[in-house]
Length: 103
Image (cartoon, rainbow, N blue to C red; front, side, top):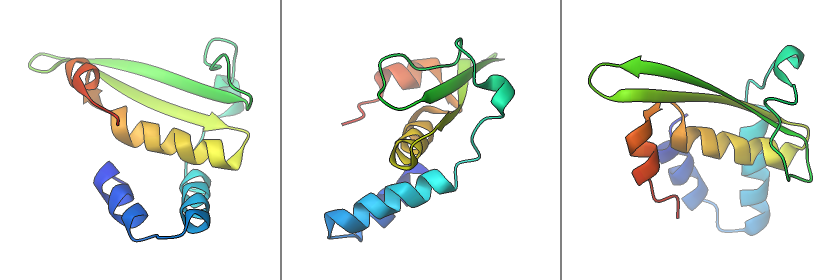
């Protein structure tokens, strides 16, 4: 699901509880990571929940380095937030990621 689709769906929800549930649903649809990739190397430090993020860099002759991310969490709401971050940043050239205003 693209960030634009997520944003459109989110805007249809007026109640904060519905928005909260939507983020949880996004997390439930996240493929997650196999246990073998849930290591100290992929663990996000400083989170109250367990969060893992795997990064892969692909070289593109025109775009430069393109970063792909996969992530997972042990908390439903955080999985949804991970999905939002992946929709925003994954499979994009590094220079676009740097220039992205996530606000």
